[in-house]
Image (cartoon, rainbow, N blue to C red; front, side, top):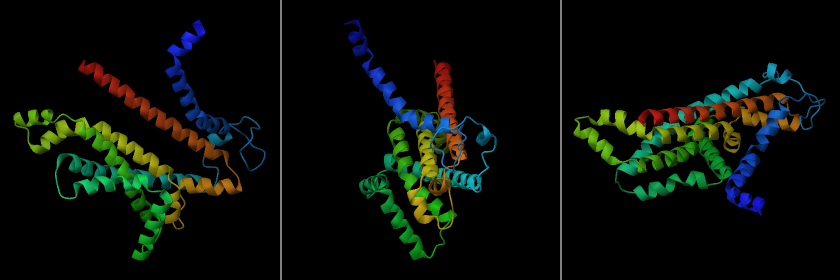
Length: 266
């Protein structure tokens, strides 16, 4: 009976831990196999422990080149989507204009639409415009499908903001720009940061839209897809593990900074 009571009391915690373990299992497998030394071309079975791939992560031709290209596209796509998405979110929440409801509905279309449909539509658009497929077509496509996610994240934050804080700033003779920089932007910053991180992850990880509009350009996801047909280099697992560790460190840093600010305010 004691065990049953303990399980009932901690059922939600146990379910959460099991779900978290299920979500992290692929990352654990990738990390473990980044230290593997396969005998053949495929890194699917554990053979021998080795750190060779970690000491030479660029040992495979074009791997680091495709990784650098993906990071550049993700960075510029994040910047573009974050700026445009933040402006759109503020416009939708703070202002009343014609077709506002239609714009609100259209914002969700890229998230609801299958990626293969959007990819084919963008390819058709670029071909009709006579654009050369490559870096710029990938960047434009990534900004387009990341924009909706940024708008959604920032819009939720802006809607929860207390307008009395901005009114208080204006009562203290702060101008519109000063009020935005000193009051509005810091309050909206968590939503903007969340949208930016989401946009970066989506852009870096995208394969379907990129594959349709890349031409001869090869990004990291496309390199992984091509390598999986000929063999799976251990260095791919190394890059994946490193990206996962960096993402975890960024999240933990944000939590630490947020905790310190709360303690300082208290």
